Picture 1 (spheres, rainbow, N blue to C red):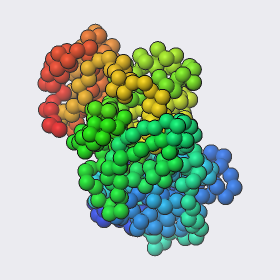
Picture 2: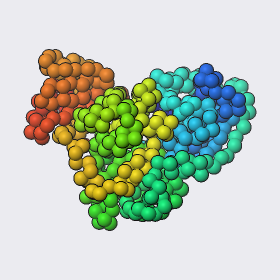
Picture 3: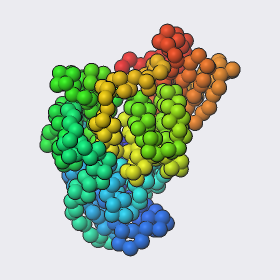
Picture 4: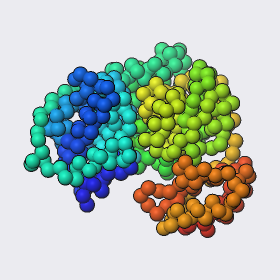
Length: 466
Protein backbone atom coordinates (compact mmCIF):
# COMPACT_ATOMS: atom_id res chain seq x y z
CA UNK A 1 0.00 0.00 0.00
CA UNK A 2 1.34 3.44 -0.89
CA UNK A 3 1.57 6.53 1.30
CA UNK A 4 -1.36 7.99 -0.66
CA UNK A 5 -3.68 5.43 0.96
CA UNK A 6 -2.78 6.87 4.37
CA UNK A 7 -4.43 10.21 3.55
CA UNK A 8 -7.94 10.35 5.04
CA UNK A 9 -10.64 13.03 5.06
CA UNK A 10 -9.19 14.94 8.03
CA UNK A 11 -5.66 13.63 8.61
CA UNK A 12 -2.98 11.12 7.63
CA UNK A 13 -3.41 7.80 9.46
CA UNK A 14 -2.42 4.15 9.01
CA UNK A 15 -0.65 1.17 10.55
CA UNK A 16 3.06 1.54 11.39
CA UNK A 17 5.52 0.61 9.86
CA UNK A 18 3.59 -0.39 6.76
CA UNK A 19 2.22 1.55 5.04
CA UNK A 20 3.14 4.50 7.28
CA UNK A 21 6.82 4.84 8.20
CA UNK A 22 9.69 7.29 8.56
CA UNK A 23 10.15 7.64 4.79
CA UNK A 24 6.52 8.66 4.49
CA UNK A 25 6.85 10.99 7.48
CA UNK A 26 9.71 12.83 5.75
CA UNK A 27 7.54 13.28 2.64
CA UNK A 28 4.59 14.54 4.68
CA UNK A 29 6.90 17.01 6.41
CA UNK A 30 8.48 18.27 3.19
CA UNK A 31 5.14 18.63 1.38
CA UNK A 32 3.39 20.20 4.37
CA UNK A 33 6.09 22.83 4.77
CA UNK A 34 5.51 24.18 1.27
CA UNK A 35 1.76 24.33 1.79
CA UNK A 36 1.81 25.80 5.32
CA UNK A 37 4.42 28.47 4.60
CA UNK A 38 2.52 29.52 1.49
CA UNK A 39 -0.75 29.76 3.41
CA UNK A 40 0.91 31.76 6.20
CA UNK A 41 2.26 34.28 3.71
CA UNK A 42 -1.17 34.68 2.14
CA UNK A 43 -2.71 34.98 5.62
CA UNK A 44 -0.51 37.93 6.52
CA UNK A 45 1.80 36.09 8.95
CA UNK A 46 5.15 37.94 8.86
CA UNK A 47 8.66 37.74 10.26
CA UNK A 48 10.34 34.60 11.58
CA UNK A 49 6.99 33.16 12.66
CA UNK A 50 5.90 32.95 9.03
CA UNK A 51 8.52 30.23 8.48
CA UNK A 52 7.99 28.36 11.75
CA UNK A 53 5.96 25.18 12.23
CA UNK A 54 5.14 23.58 15.59
CA UNK A 55 5.60 19.81 15.95
CA UNK A 56 4.33 17.67 18.82
CA UNK A 57 3.79 13.95 19.28
CA UNK A 58 1.76 11.54 21.43
CA UNK A 59 2.88 8.55 23.52
CA UNK A 60 2.83 5.81 20.85
CA UNK A 61 6.01 3.75 20.46
CA UNK A 62 6.50 4.94 16.88
CA UNK A 63 5.80 8.62 17.59
CA UNK A 64 9.34 9.81 18.46
CA UNK A 65 10.93 8.32 15.32
CA UNK A 66 8.08 9.48 13.07
CA UNK A 67 8.30 12.92 14.66
CA UNK A 68 12.04 13.13 13.98
CA UNK A 69 11.57 12.11 10.34
CA UNK A 70 8.73 14.63 9.96
CA UNK A 71 10.96 17.39 11.38
CA UNK A 72 13.75 16.50 8.92
CA UNK A 73 11.28 16.82 6.06
CA UNK A 74 10.02 20.18 7.30
CA UNK A 75 13.56 21.53 7.71
CA UNK A 76 14.71 20.19 4.34
CA UNK A 77 11.85 22.14 2.75
CA UNK A 78 13.05 25.33 4.43
CA UNK A 79 10.80 25.54 7.48
CA UNK A 80 12.04 26.28 10.98
CA UNK A 81 10.58 23.95 13.60
CA UNK A 82 9.57 24.44 17.22
CA UNK A 83 9.38 20.97 18.75
CA UNK A 84 7.12 20.98 21.83
CA UNK A 85 7.67 17.30 22.68
CA UNK A 86 5.13 14.79 24.04
CA UNK A 87 1.85 16.70 24.26
CA UNK A 88 -1.88 16.43 23.68
CA UNK A 89 -3.22 17.55 20.31
CA UNK A 90 -4.95 20.73 21.65
CA UNK A 91 -1.54 21.76 23.01
CA UNK A 92 -0.35 22.17 19.40
CA UNK A 93 -3.41 24.33 18.60
CA UNK A 94 -2.50 26.52 21.56
CA UNK A 95 1.19 26.64 20.58
CA UNK A 96 0.61 27.72 16.98
CA UNK A 97 -1.47 30.66 18.26
CA UNK A 98 0.75 31.47 21.24
CA UNK A 99 3.81 31.66 18.97
CA UNK A 100 1.91 33.07 15.94
CA UNK A 101 3.39 30.35 13.72
CA UNK A 102 2.66 29.22 10.18
CA UNK A 103 1.13 25.96 11.33
CA UNK A 104 1.45 22.81 13.41
CA UNK A 105 1.66 19.06 12.89
CA UNK A 106 0.76 16.58 15.62
CA UNK A 107 2.03 13.02 15.36
CA UNK A 108 -0.87 10.88 16.62
CA UNK A 109 -3.45 8.30 15.64
CA UNK A 110 -5.96 9.64 18.17
CA UNK A 111 -8.30 6.83 19.29
CA UNK A 112 -6.92 4.11 17.00
CA UNK A 113 -5.21 0.96 18.36
CA UNK A 114 -1.53 1.04 19.34
CA UNK A 115 -0.15 -0.16 15.99
CA UNK A 116 -1.54 2.93 14.20
CA UNK A 117 -0.03 6.38 13.87
CA UNK A 118 -0.50 9.48 11.77
CA UNK A 119 -0.36 13.26 11.38
CA UNK A 120 -2.88 15.99 12.17
CA UNK A 121 -2.01 19.14 10.24
CA UNK A 122 -3.24 22.64 11.02
CA UNK A 123 -2.27 25.98 9.52
CA UNK A 124 -1.90 29.45 11.05
CA UNK A 125 -4.39 30.22 13.86
CA UNK A 126 -4.89 26.42 14.15
CA UNK A 127 -7.18 26.36 11.12
CA UNK A 128 -7.85 22.73 10.17
CA UNK A 129 -6.24 21.13 7.14
CA UNK A 130 -8.53 18.46 5.68
CA UNK A 131 -8.93 16.81 2.30
CA UNK A 132 -10.55 19.88 0.73
CA UNK A 133 -8.62 22.47 2.74
CA UNK A 134 -5.03 21.57 1.91
CA UNK A 135 -4.53 17.89 2.72
CA UNK A 136 -5.35 16.92 -0.86
CA UNK A 137 -2.69 19.34 -2.14
CA UNK A 138 -0.12 17.95 0.30
CA UNK A 139 -0.95 14.41 -0.83
CA UNK A 140 -0.37 15.31 -4.49
CA UNK A 141 3.12 16.62 -3.70
CA UNK A 142 4.07 13.46 -1.75
CA UNK A 143 3.14 11.27 -4.71
CA UNK A 144 6.04 12.53 -6.85
CA UNK A 145 8.44 13.60 -4.12
CA UNK A 146 11.90 11.99 -4.30
CA UNK A 147 14.14 12.66 -1.28
CA UNK A 148 17.29 12.00 -3.36
CA UNK A 149 16.54 14.85 -5.77
CA UNK A 150 14.50 17.25 -3.62
CA UNK A 151 16.22 20.55 -2.82
CA UNK A 152 17.42 20.74 0.79
CA UNK A 153 17.18 24.13 2.50
CA UNK A 154 18.26 23.40 6.07
CA UNK A 155 15.74 24.94 8.43
CA UNK A 156 16.44 25.16 12.16
CA UNK A 157 14.96 23.20 15.10
CA UNK A 158 14.25 24.55 18.58
CA UNK A 159 12.96 22.45 21.46
CA UNK A 160 10.52 24.49 23.54
CA UNK A 161 8.64 23.72 26.77
CA UNK A 162 5.31 25.57 26.69
CA UNK A 163 3.55 23.71 29.51
CA UNK A 164 3.59 26.70 31.84
CA UNK A 165 1.97 28.96 29.25
CA UNK A 166 -0.56 26.27 28.27
CA UNK A 167 -1.49 25.69 31.90
CA UNK A 168 -1.85 29.42 32.59
CA UNK A 169 -4.21 29.74 29.63
CA UNK A 170 -6.42 26.87 30.79
CA UNK A 171 -6.48 28.02 34.42
CA UNK A 172 -8.46 31.08 33.32
CA UNK A 173 -11.44 28.79 32.85
CA UNK A 174 -11.34 26.97 36.20
CA UNK A 175 -13.35 28.40 39.10
CA UNK A 176 -10.95 30.33 41.39
CA UNK A 177 -12.61 28.91 44.52
CA UNK A 178 -11.75 25.41 43.30
CA UNK A 179 -8.20 26.45 42.40
CA UNK A 180 -7.63 27.93 45.86
CA UNK A 181 -9.20 24.94 47.60
CA UNK A 182 -12.11 26.88 49.09
CA UNK A 183 -14.43 24.51 47.23
CA UNK A 184 -13.72 20.79 47.01
CA UNK A 185 -14.70 18.13 44.49
CA UNK A 186 -13.81 14.52 43.86
CA UNK A 187 -13.85 13.13 40.33
CA UNK A 188 -12.55 10.08 38.49
CA UNK A 189 -10.60 10.38 35.24
CA UNK A 190 -9.75 7.60 32.80
CA UNK A 191 -6.84 8.85 30.69
CA UNK A 192 -7.04 5.75 28.44
CA UNK A 193 -3.22 5.38 28.70
CA UNK A 194 -3.14 8.41 26.41
CA UNK A 195 -1.96 12.00 26.52
CA UNK A 196 -4.45 13.03 29.22
CA UNK A 197 -2.17 11.06 31.54
CA UNK A 198 0.51 13.68 30.89
CA UNK A 199 -1.70 16.74 30.45
CA UNK A 200 -3.91 16.49 33.55
CA UNK A 201 -1.10 16.29 36.15
CA UNK A 202 0.86 19.07 34.43
CA UNK A 203 -2.12 21.42 34.10
CA UNK A 204 -4.66 20.60 36.81
CA UNK A 205 -2.43 19.50 39.72
CA UNK A 206 -2.45 23.15 40.86
CA UNK A 207 -6.24 23.04 41.39
CA UNK A 208 -6.08 22.46 45.15
CA UNK A 209 -9.76 21.68 45.63
CA UNK A 210 -9.84 18.97 42.97
CA UNK A 211 -9.24 15.37 43.99
CA UNK A 212 -8.70 13.14 40.94
CA UNK A 213 -8.88 9.37 41.18
CA UNK A 214 -6.66 8.28 38.32
CA UNK A 215 -7.40 5.40 35.95
CA UNK A 216 -4.97 4.40 33.18
CA UNK A 217 -2.72 7.44 33.52
CA UNK A 218 0.47 5.54 32.66
CA UNK A 219 1.32 6.21 29.01
CA UNK A 220 4.95 5.11 29.11
CA UNK A 221 4.53 1.91 27.08
CA UNK A 222 2.41 3.15 24.18
CA UNK A 223 -0.07 0.32 24.86
CA UNK A 224 -3.71 0.59 25.91
CA UNK A 225 -5.63 -1.35 28.55
CA UNK A 226 -8.75 -0.55 26.55
CA UNK A 227 -9.15 1.11 23.16
CA UNK A 228 -8.69 4.88 23.73
CA UNK A 229 -12.11 5.71 22.32
CA UNK A 230 -14.65 7.06 24.85
CA UNK A 231 -17.51 6.71 22.34
CA UNK A 232 -17.48 2.92 22.70
CA UNK A 233 -19.54 2.07 25.77
CA UNK A 234 -17.39 -0.96 26.65
CA UNK A 235 -14.37 1.34 27.06
CA UNK A 236 -16.19 3.25 29.82
CA UNK A 237 -16.87 0.21 32.02
CA UNK A 238 -13.93 0.78 34.38
CA UNK A 239 -14.88 4.45 34.80
CA UNK A 240 -18.58 3.66 35.26
CA UNK A 241 -17.76 1.25 38.08
CA UNK A 242 -15.26 3.55 39.78
CA UNK A 243 -17.38 6.72 39.98
CA UNK A 244 -20.24 5.50 42.23
CA UNK A 245 -17.84 3.26 44.19
CA UNK A 246 -15.70 6.27 45.12
CA UNK A 247 -18.54 8.72 45.70
CA UNK A 248 -17.20 11.04 43.00
CA UNK A 249 -19.24 13.90 41.54
CA UNK A 250 -18.54 12.79 37.96
CA UNK A 251 -16.20 10.82 35.75
CA UNK A 252 -14.34 11.73 32.58
CA UNK A 253 -12.76 9.63 29.84
CA UNK A 254 -10.33 11.05 27.27
CA UNK A 255 -9.29 9.63 23.93
CA UNK A 256 -5.67 8.91 22.97
CA UNK A 257 -4.60 12.45 22.05
CA UNK A 258 -6.96 14.14 24.57
CA UNK A 259 -8.84 16.31 22.11
CA UNK A 260 -12.06 14.47 23.05
CA UNK A 261 -13.66 14.13 26.45
CA UNK A 262 -16.73 12.13 27.49
CA UNK A 263 -18.46 12.18 30.88
CA UNK A 264 -20.41 9.91 33.20
CA UNK A 265 -22.63 11.19 36.01
CA UNK A 266 -22.35 10.40 39.71
CA UNK A 267 -24.27 7.14 39.16
CA UNK A 268 -21.76 6.02 36.53
CA UNK A 269 -24.22 6.50 33.67
CA UNK A 270 -22.91 7.81 30.35
CA UNK A 271 -23.79 11.39 29.47
CA UNK A 272 -24.57 12.03 25.80
CA UNK A 273 -22.15 14.60 24.42
CA UNK A 274 -25.06 16.57 22.93
CA UNK A 275 -26.74 16.66 26.35
CA UNK A 276 -23.48 17.78 27.94
CA UNK A 277 -23.26 20.59 25.37
CA UNK A 278 -26.85 21.67 26.13
CA UNK A 279 -26.00 21.87 29.84
CA UNK A 280 -22.71 23.76 29.31
CA UNK A 281 -24.53 26.21 27.03
CA UNK A 282 -26.90 27.20 29.84
CA UNK A 283 -23.92 28.17 31.99
CA UNK A 284 -21.98 29.94 29.21
CA UNK A 285 -24.91 31.99 27.92
CA UNK A 286 -25.45 33.57 31.33
CA UNK A 287 -22.38 35.70 30.69
CA UNK A 288 -22.41 35.58 26.87
CA UNK A 289 -25.85 36.97 26.18
CA UNK A 290 -27.11 36.43 22.64
CA UNK A 291 -24.07 34.41 21.55
CA UNK A 292 -24.17 31.74 18.86
CA UNK A 293 -23.57 28.04 19.53
CA UNK A 294 -22.64 25.44 16.91
CA UNK A 295 -24.07 21.95 17.20
CA UNK A 296 -23.63 18.72 15.26
CA UNK A 297 -26.77 18.09 13.17
CA UNK A 298 -27.11 14.60 14.72
CA UNK A 299 -27.72 16.17 18.14
CA UNK A 300 -30.93 15.91 20.11
CA UNK A 301 -33.54 18.51 19.22
CA UNK A 302 -33.27 19.65 22.84
CA UNK A 303 -29.90 21.26 22.00
CA UNK A 304 -31.18 24.02 19.65
CA UNK A 305 -34.27 24.40 21.85
CA UNK A 306 -32.17 25.09 24.95
CA UNK A 307 -29.83 27.43 23.06
CA UNK A 308 -32.84 29.53 22.02
CA UNK A 309 -34.38 29.42 25.50
CA UNK A 310 -31.13 30.79 26.92
CA UNK A 311 -31.15 33.66 24.44
CA UNK A 312 -28.53 32.21 22.12
CA UNK A 313 -28.54 31.48 18.40
CA UNK A 314 -28.24 27.80 17.39
CA UNK A 315 -26.03 27.11 14.36
CA UNK A 316 -26.30 23.68 12.74
CA UNK A 317 -23.14 22.13 11.30
CA UNK A 318 -22.03 19.15 9.28
CA UNK A 319 -20.20 16.42 11.19
CA UNK A 320 -16.39 16.64 11.33
CA UNK A 321 -13.89 19.01 12.92
CA UNK A 322 -13.08 20.78 9.63
CA UNK A 323 -16.73 21.78 9.23
CA UNK A 324 -17.34 22.50 12.92
CA UNK A 325 -14.31 24.80 13.18
CA UNK A 326 -15.25 26.63 9.98
CA UNK A 327 -18.83 27.13 11.20
CA UNK A 328 -17.60 28.29 14.62
CA UNK A 329 -15.39 30.93 12.99
CA UNK A 330 -18.02 32.00 10.47
CA UNK A 331 -20.76 32.43 13.12
CA UNK A 332 -18.39 33.73 15.82
CA UNK A 333 -19.84 31.18 18.19
CA UNK A 334 -18.61 30.82 21.78
CA UNK A 335 -18.80 27.02 21.82
CA UNK A 336 -19.58 24.07 19.59
CA UNK A 337 -20.01 20.37 20.19
CA UNK A 338 -20.22 17.05 18.38
CA UNK A 339 -21.67 13.69 19.42
CA UNK A 340 -18.12 12.33 19.10
CA UNK A 341 -16.98 14.26 22.19
CA UNK A 342 -15.20 17.07 20.36
CA UNK A 343 -16.01 20.39 22.04
CA UNK A 344 -14.86 23.63 20.40
CA UNK A 345 -14.28 26.93 22.18
CA UNK A 346 -13.88 30.49 20.98
CA UNK A 347 -11.41 31.08 23.84
CA UNK A 348 -9.31 28.12 22.63
CA UNK A 349 -8.84 29.75 19.22
CA UNK A 350 -11.92 28.03 17.82
CA UNK A 351 -10.30 24.61 18.26
CA UNK A 352 -11.44 21.46 20.03
CA UNK A 353 -10.00 20.79 23.47
CA UNK A 354 -10.64 17.99 25.92
CA UNK A 355 -8.91 19.99 28.65
CA UNK A 356 -11.11 23.03 28.07
CA UNK A 357 -14.27 20.91 28.13
CA UNK A 358 -13.06 19.30 31.36
CA UNK A 359 -12.45 22.76 32.87
CA UNK A 360 -15.93 23.92 31.84
CA UNK A 361 -17.66 20.96 33.47
CA UNK A 362 -15.76 21.01 36.78
CA UNK A 363 -16.27 24.78 37.01
CA UNK A 364 -20.01 24.44 36.41
CA UNK A 365 -20.15 21.72 39.08
CA UNK A 366 -18.21 23.74 41.65
CA UNK A 367 -21.21 25.71 42.90
CA UNK A 368 -23.93 23.23 41.94
CA UNK A 369 -26.42 22.27 44.65
CA UNK A 370 -27.63 19.14 42.85
CA UNK A 371 -25.82 16.06 41.55
CA UNK A 372 -24.88 16.03 37.86
CA UNK A 373 -27.68 13.63 36.87
CA UNK A 374 -30.30 16.05 38.21
CA UNK A 375 -28.62 19.03 36.55
CA UNK A 376 -28.68 17.22 33.20
CA UNK A 377 -32.24 15.84 33.50
CA UNK A 378 -34.00 18.96 32.08
CA UNK A 379 -31.83 18.65 28.95
CA UNK A 380 -33.10 15.12 28.22
CA UNK A 381 -36.44 15.79 26.53
CA UNK A 382 -36.62 13.11 23.84
CA UNK A 383 -35.71 9.48 23.25
CA UNK A 384 -32.76 8.79 20.95
CA UNK A 385 -31.97 5.67 18.95
CA UNK A 386 -28.22 6.19 19.21
CA UNK A 387 -26.20 5.83 16.01
CA UNK A 388 -27.13 2.66 14.11
CA UNK A 389 -25.09 1.52 11.11
CA UNK A 390 -26.58 -0.21 8.07
CA UNK A 391 -24.64 -1.94 5.31
CA UNK A 392 -25.72 -0.70 1.90
CA UNK A 393 -23.89 -0.78 -1.44
CA UNK A 394 -26.27 1.81 -2.94
CA UNK A 395 -26.17 4.55 -0.34
CA UNK A 396 -27.44 7.34 -2.61
CA UNK A 397 -30.28 5.16 -3.88
CA UNK A 398 -31.36 4.35 -0.34
CA UNK A 399 -31.40 8.02 0.65
CA UNK A 400 -33.44 8.91 -2.44
CA UNK A 401 -35.94 6.13 -1.66
CA UNK A 402 -36.23 7.26 1.94
CA UNK A 403 -36.87 10.85 0.89
CA UNK A 404 -39.57 9.82 -1.61
CA UNK A 405 -41.19 7.54 1.01
CA UNK A 406 -42.03 10.57 3.16
CA UNK A 407 -43.09 13.28 0.70
CA UNK A 408 -44.82 15.37 3.38
CA UNK A 409 -41.85 15.45 5.74
CA UNK A 410 -39.50 18.41 6.01
CA UNK A 411 -36.06 17.52 4.66
CA UNK A 412 -32.66 19.09 4.15
CA UNK A 413 -29.36 17.71 2.93
CA UNK A 414 -26.62 19.59 4.75
CA UNK A 415 -24.95 16.27 5.62
CA UNK A 416 -26.69 13.19 4.25
CA UNK A 417 -30.47 13.43 4.67
CA UNK A 418 -32.20 15.08 7.63
CA UNK A 419 -35.90 14.33 7.79
CA UNK A 420 -38.59 15.71 10.13
CA UNK A 421 -41.88 13.83 9.97
CA UNK A 422 -43.37 15.64 12.95
CA UNK A 423 -43.83 12.58 15.15
CA UNK A 424 -40.16 11.63 14.66
CA UNK A 425 -37.05 13.11 13.10
CA UNK A 426 -33.75 11.66 11.94
CA UNK A 427 -30.44 12.16 10.18
CA UNK A 428 -28.98 9.55 7.85
CA UNK A 429 -25.36 10.05 6.80
CA UNK A 430 -23.13 8.14 4.42
CA UNK A 431 -19.78 6.80 5.59
CA UNK A 432 -16.86 8.33 3.67
CA UNK A 433 -14.91 5.09 3.60
CA UNK A 434 -17.34 2.16 3.91
CA UNK A 435 -20.64 1.00 2.35
CA UNK A 436 -22.50 2.18 5.44
CA UNK A 437 -25.42 4.45 6.25
CA UNK A 438 -25.51 5.88 9.78
CA UNK A 439 -28.94 6.53 11.30
CA UNK A 440 -29.69 8.80 14.28
CA UNK A 441 -33.43 8.95 15.03
CA UNK A 442 -35.33 10.73 17.78
CA UNK A 443 -38.94 10.97 18.98
CA UNK A 444 -40.92 11.81 22.11
CA UNK A 445 -41.24 8.20 23.22
CA UNK A 446 -39.36 4.91 22.93
CA UNK A 447 -42.22 3.09 21.21
CA UNK A 448 -42.09 5.54 18.30
CA UNK A 449 -38.30 5.29 18.07
CA UNK A 450 -38.41 1.47 17.99
CA UNK A 451 -41.26 1.40 15.48
CA UNK A 452 -39.63 3.85 13.09
CA UNK A 453 -36.18 2.25 13.23
CA UNK A 454 -37.82 -1.07 12.31
CA UNK A 455 -39.81 0.61 9.53
CA UNK A 456 -36.75 2.32 8.03
CA UNK A 457 -34.50 -0.72 8.22
CA UNK A 458 -35.67 -2.36 4.94
CA UNK A 459 -34.82 0.88 3.11
CA UNK A 460 -31.48 1.50 4.84
CA UNK A 461 -30.05 -2.00 4.47
CA UNK A 462 -28.66 -4.68 6.78
CA UNK A 463 -28.16 -3.54 10.38
CA UNK A 464 -24.58 -3.92 11.59
CA UNK A 465 -24.23 -5.41 15.07
CA UNK A 466 -22.18 -3.40 17.58
